[in-house]
Length: 405
Ligand SMILES: Cc1cc2nc3c(=O)[nH]c(=O)nc-3n(C[C@H](O)[C@H](O)[C@H](O)COP(=O)(O)OP(=O)(O)OC[C@H]3O[C@@H](n4cnc5c(N)ncnc54)[C@H](O)[C@@H]3O)c2cc1C
Image 1 (tube, protein in one colour):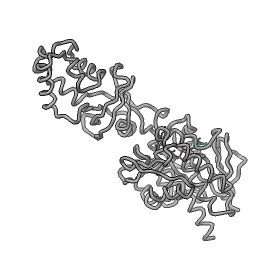
Image 2 (spheres, protein in one colour):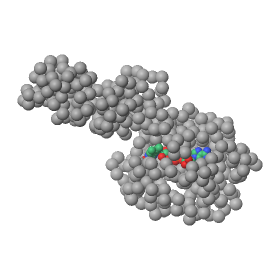
Image 3 (tube, rainbow, N blue to C red):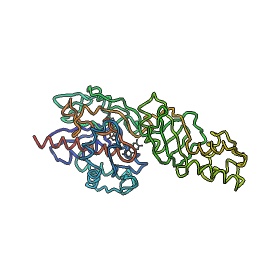
Image 4 (cartoon, rainbow, N blue to C red):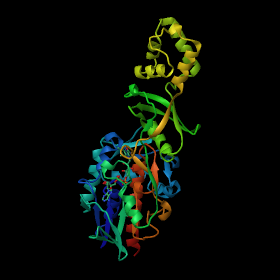
C-alpha cells in the first residue's frame, strides 16, 4: 500500500486527496491540517458564496509562472472541475463574467461536499497537526519526525489570510528542502492612500480606475470602488493591487473617473446649467450626480466651499470640479498586508517542478500544489480553479505511476 501524505487540508489538498483515494485501496491517504477544522478558508471565499471557478478563464487571468500553469489548467479545465464537483453531488451556476458558484449559493456546500466525499473514501484527516519538519527518508518522507509516507503532496497555501491557517509555513518547509521560493507579496488586497479624506469612508461608487507607476499608466479597470478610512478597496482596486505590491519602491497613483458615463465637457455643461436653472449651491449641485460625501470631498479638493452659490463660481472652478470628478487622484502609500490579502503573489519557483504533474524535479516523490506555487490569479474564481486543477494533477500522477508499476 502506498502511503500518501497531504500537508494542508485546504482546496488543493482535498482535490488531491479525493483524486488519489478514488483509485482504491492501494493508497492510504492522510491529510495533515494544522487548524482544528479543515477547509476553513473555503467558508470565507466569494463573500460566503465561494466563487469556485470561472467559465471564461484565459491565460491573462494568471500571474507569476503563467507558462507553467497552462498545461494543467487546460487538462483540468473549469468544465472538468465542475464535473469533479458534480461527481460529489455538488451542482453549480455560472453568473456574470463567467463566475461559477455552488447552486446552493453557499460556500458551506462546497466544504460539505469535499468533506463527505473524503470521508466516504476513507481519507484520514488529522487536524490540529502543524507540520514543521519534512525529512527525506528511504525515498519517501518523515513528517515532524513521526509520520512516514511514500508520497508527499504539499498543499499548505501561501502567506495570505493567516487567520485561515496560511502564514507562509509552506515556504519555510520548501526552503528547508532547498527548493527556491520567489519572494511572497500580498495580492488581491486594498490600497492605502496618503492624505486620504476620512469622510469618504463607506462610499461606494462605480468608477473607471487607472493605475500610474512613476507617472506612466500601467493598468485600468472599471468597477465598484469602496472608499475606506485608510484608502481604496473593492474588486477593481484589488485587481490592481498586485502591480503595486510587487514594486514596493515605485511611485504609484490611482486616478478615479467617478462618473464614467459622462464626458468632462458634458459634466461641465450640466453643472453650469443646473447652477443657473436651480439657483443651487455648489454642494447641492453635486448632490444630483454623486454620493454626498464624495461630492463634498471633490469640493474640498477644489478648495470650493459647499455653500458657495453656483452662479458665483468662476470658469476655472467649473473646470476644476469637472476635472476632479473625472480624474480624482490619490497617491498610494502601500498595499494592505497579508492579513487582508486574498492571495499570495510569488511562492515556490515553478522551474523546480514538472508542469504536467506538479512533481518536484529534485524529489520524485514530492508534489507541490495550489497557492504555494508561484501562480496567482485575478478576482473571479481563478485561484480556486488553480487549486483544484493542480491538486487533481498531482493526485492523478500518483495513481498513474502506481498503475504503470
Ligand atoms: C477571504 C478570501 C476570499 C477568497 N475568495 C476566493 C474566491 O471566491 N474565489 C477564488 O478563486 N479564490 C478565492 N480566494 C483565494 C483562495 O481561497 C485560495 O487561493 C485557495 O484556497 C488556495 O488553495 P490552497 O489549497 O493552495 O491553500 P488553502 O486553501 O489556503 O489551504 C491551505 C491549508 O493548509 C493548512 N496549513 C498551512 N500550513 C500548514 C502546516 N505547516 N501544517 C499543516 N497544515 C497547514 C492551512 O491551515 C490551510 O487549511 C479567497 C481567499 C480569501 C482569503
